[in-house]
Image 1 (spheres, rainbow, N blue to C red):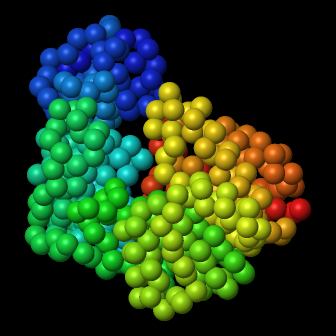
Image 2 (image 1 turned 90 degrees about the vertical axis):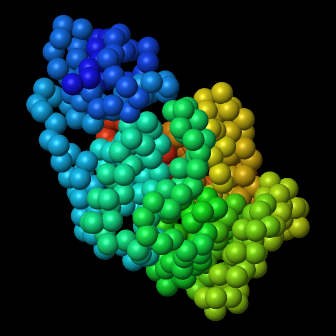
Amino acid sequence: MSEASVTRRAEERIHNGHPWIYRSDVTAVTAGAGDLLQVKASNGRVLGHAMFSDQSLITLRMIARGPGALPASWLRDRLQAAIAWREQLTIDATAFRLVHGEGDLLPSLVVDRYGDVLVMQALSQGMAARQDEIVATLAELTGARGILARNDPKVRDLEGLPREVTVVHGDVPDIVTVREGRIEMDVDLRHGQKTGMFLDQRENHEAAASYARGRVLDAFSYQGGFALACAPQAREVLALDISEAAVAQISAHASRNGLTNVTAQAVNVFDELRDLERGGDRFDLIVLDPPAFAKNRASVPKALSGYKEINLRALKLLAPGGHLVTCSCSYNVDEGTFGSVILDAAIDAHADVTVVEKRMQARDHPILLGVPETYYLKCFVLRKIA
């Protein structure tokens, strides 16, 4: 079998349960791109098994720890376990995540379900080398009508892999209709965000709806998940996003679901929040769900400034007794830092605020303990007392 030797630092990392071993901690390797190999300590002790990349800084992605043999059925077994876990969740939606990479011990593999169609992403050489096996296993275990490989994220460049979108099983229509709770939406699987739409906020949509009343503002609304979920409980909902296409989609979905109280506007959200404040507007629920402001560590200071700005504006726009649902999907901004930014915003807004809930990504996007990269979505539900 192919093998790699690693440093003491990597050995400690493996012992602590982190699956990523960087190039600087690999001292020797005999393997080809995407190979499954045995990982050894400097003294020859077997530490486990990993997939190898000859391009990425993440050279090894651990599949199993310990000296034992890796069963030939490991890939099937883990796919089956991931699917079984989602069945236990009794998700009230037809679109959800089936496989969440490291969180399902299948590093760099993402699989989402949209009705009877699956969309997968193989984001490393190791998973790309096993794509045919993955597709065949998924088709067998799920009975999917079709499977689309959305292998177009930029991260594939780091693996020396092409960016492409291909149908790898059955038939995949251009548009698929899905349901989240009572809301129906059309999803463009080939061109929509991520694998078609953002699925990790599903449970937070439901939570936000429980606080909805009066006037609701959904800022950075994209597909309008929060706006549409809150509309049945609200008097009126204003959804803001910079994308004309997203705004058109929100309006279409509101009409489709008989939600006549939703208004969607294509605007620069930062500017519009300031304009609403100057105009004396007030809202009973405000949702802030911006894109990731900090895509790397270097961008964190600017990101924190952005988070403070929008939270400050939102707290000034929030009526006393109202709720703010504020989110960050920037992994590089941890929960403590995000909380500190919200506190600074509250101080500058002269607002007394309590924390009602701390939430995270939906349960079908599991966080692997000891792997902070898997905890990326932070969500605070706040109440403005005065």
